[in-house]
Image 1 (cartoon, rainbow, N blue to C red):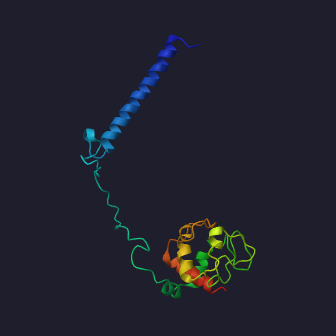
Image 2: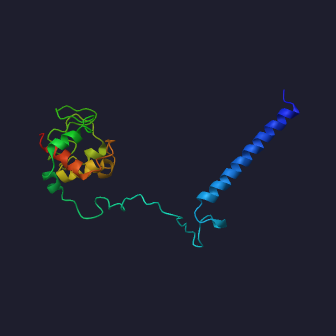
Image 3: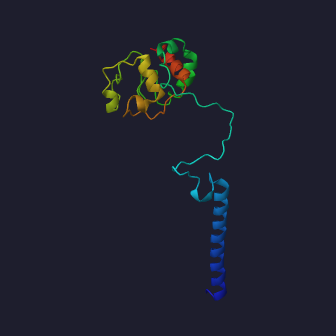
Length: 179
């Protein structure tokens, strides 16, 4: 089955493939390694330097919310647009309803000012149930809608949150308009 010629071709193919792989690796290191030389781009302190910078035309990122000045949630919600909030609420509508019935998540009728974990018959997480004595103020809703897992660690809500401040304010204005 395997004669000497077949074995020679197989060993030659494997060795040739390894040689090509080594050459491609060497060429890639030469082209893309920062710094060059035997240091692998490292300086004496172990610090790696950047060879070049690509200008994308974007400015440096602004500080994230909460890192700069405090947010006036009351003013944002007062300026919120309930009609725009209704459009954003469609993301929430896959789990939450405004008709008094629970879905995957509890119904949100009259949620602004209502106590946490107040929907009768809904099985809340322990983390949410622990906050049952606290009301859903616009500030609490604003923080929760930004990042539910950070606002109430242990919540069952899998939604990542609404990153835009305006969207959060609009949804709160929409919820406040739907008691």
